[in-house]
Amino acid sequence: MNTNYRHIIDIIHQLGIAFQEIDHMESHSCDESKVLRSRANMDGVGSKNLVFHAKGHFFLVTTTGDTQIKARNFKHEFGSKDIRFASQEEITNLMQATIGSIPPFGFENKTLPIYVDSGIFGSENFCFNPNDPTKSIQIRTKDLRTIYDTLPNPVRYFKQTEEGFDILEDV
Image (cartoon, rainbow, N blue to C red):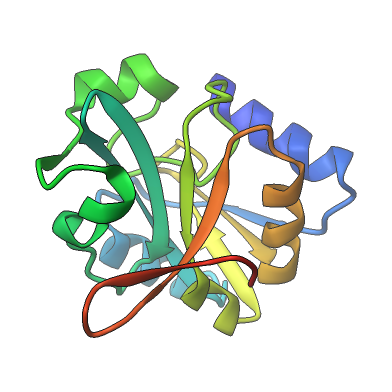
């Protein structure tokens, strides 16, 4: 059992959060996960978790599986127009995760800034791979907010606009 998965389950249990977990075929994309979850009657918005690198720093961006994220839209927030996706090696070193099943929380790195798309909270449930491409977890989106409120990581919320993104003070 991987460490991130164990941390995720520990966080959920410590906060008394109800969740559903399923095992499924290995998934390599948000679209594949969506199909596998649907077959198991798991409903809710699926997550997409991307790690960006800018000016020597890394940032985790959590959004919905159907949302397109353009790194350049974060240039003001990240302090650089030179933004790129982190490599698998960097992600492994940073958070012991695998591209395709990066978790939205539960990793040991307590300083990695997390940017959360406020659009997630328009759905009742939130589904994600817990750093295991053969598992999916579903929680209520209101409980996701509770989780983020308890993390030591800096968490910021954003809203997509036609011009880019707006950082929100509260969701």
